[in-house]
Image 1 (spheres, rainbow, N blue to C red):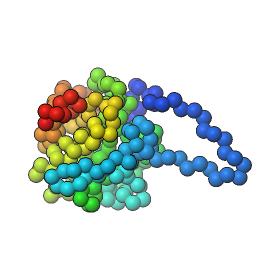
Image 2 (cartoon, rainbow, N blue to C red):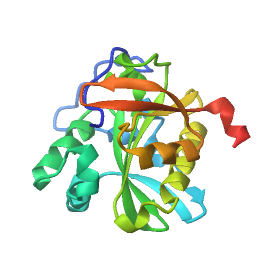
Image 3 (cartoon, helix red, strand yellow):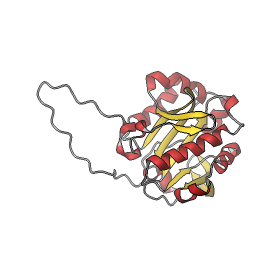
Image 4 (spheres, rainbow, N blue to C red):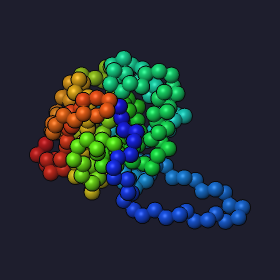
Length: 226
């Protein structure tokens, strides 16, 4: 399943201080969205990426707006077999709230292709995630989880195109990130194949608590060869 626990490296990139005291009678400060925070270099402001299928944007999830759509995708048997989030909306909501209420180390997003929401993504700091316990993580490693919402979008190369564009976007917008990683279930051979076709390399098998995974890595230095 996707990341839910902090990993061993939990120190933010910038020092954190106490918030300033509110003036008497002032409205309480509004907490900034984690998606606009420093841990993922202000992901909410990233521009769309060009793909052969049209412009593609990562739009941070808003629970009220997006819950029904994402719940429907999670209840697709082909998705549920690997995400294990089938069930009522509250099952999906609990998964999303764990990220939306965090510090921004994992940001759930809709993938919007040519104006149409059609996929669900999680962009996360792998070096700050529990997965860092299971592979030799490097500072600023950035991870990707993906599901394509409609069956018609699967099996025709679209996932590969979007993975390539998203990995490029991460490397463009996160200059301190040297690698994009993923850990698809080894049983999910179409997913592993899509990552390979998108320029990721297979590194090793890793045993996570809930699955045996293929560690896939897209190196910054390999980008110019694609």
